[in-house]
Image (tube, rainbow, N blue to C red):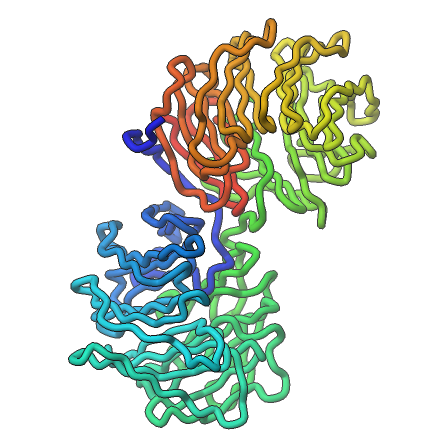
Length: 612
């Protein structure tokens, strides 16, 4: 099965933001676009129209990004597996293409920065690498490198170039702060440690003033240090009494000379450069990881670890939430029966309903500290149904998100799968203990009709036939069972040496296809349960999600190899492949109109692809 000669699936839009990347949200110098990472993809989004462009070339999760002073170049570094080298990619912003690819650091690129006149790029390796490397941007070659810290100090976390010289930069980290000079002729970099007197700090962010006289350093202790760049001596620090809770994570200089900073407890503050007193203050939810000024700072954007992006107005210091997305694994995604405009996703603690075209969040239903395993819409559109890890089935009104009813103790090891009959009067649920239960439901009364005990492992997927007389359940015990929903007995059972993860009826319902941890795709007869054919679905990792297009010509798979594959049903061949997820794909769904595919993954990213 050669994946190499396949066409690429066209990525239409993404819903997601890697909030955990330090300084991972940038505003481009044109003031019209924001740049942020999502998994292995770099997203360039128009602030007004929300139109997205994707820069794809990384093989691992993006760990840091930077933009050059003119906006001509972008740079991004990645994380890779232990023992392997991590790439740094410099992108040509106008052409939206790779300018150069640089490979030297091991495992992770911690931070990177462009020099003032775009002559050099300085990159800082992660904990396993510990080196700082200067690259020549015109040739793409490494000029020189050196260990970033002394052996007695911890790893370095931040790096910043001077604003007027291509030959001076600063690095900061765990009990280390150094000013470096680049000797281009002899291909060397020389470090001078800054004298901080009695202070011991861990530095998370650095900002050099416009005239290169001082560097401001944000610390995990919650204060900001001011260091003289020419003498390398500590000058001042503050606030001395009321330090910022959970540390200063990111800071940037305003045109007035004051400092704008973001902290670990979600505080956004403007402090004076003279006495470090707080001038303005506001608070958002989640730890702040990035601040990005737009233009001269009349507006700025704040990114948090909860994957929220806020847009602040500087004069009023009021904010609006512009982007909200999942920051935890997404367990399920579902479209309503005949609508392709909306879809719902379930995650840890919430269910969210999204508008498919714009990616806007329309509704959020929150059940704190509880994992939602499965979500479905009633065919009549009157309720959103969900199965939770506390063993309850919860139903909500789709307009308001208010609770309609709860079925308590529906299963004793969590509800892992739910499905609804086409008349919206029955729910079929599967549990972690392996039972399949049928419920008669109305908004006023919910009663269990039958419990069918055959599976020995958790039920992972349930699909119901159009005539509501039969359903198929897949389980992690290696069986798929076709149930008679009139007599509540087993019609057929399918055995395989795998943990089944997904099952689908073909539209004419004479065959089912299955996927699981053995990486095989099985075609089976529904009439007698016999196997028709078996395909190799993936080279690495299990198949977690599977769906068939409404016309039955194609089916989609996604799994632990993090690629979306489009297959011809009858030929059993892959025609298109899509890469972009950085986490394992958990579910895939084809829209009812057959025009696009939505895939979700463990990193919290939602990707929408065009169905060819």
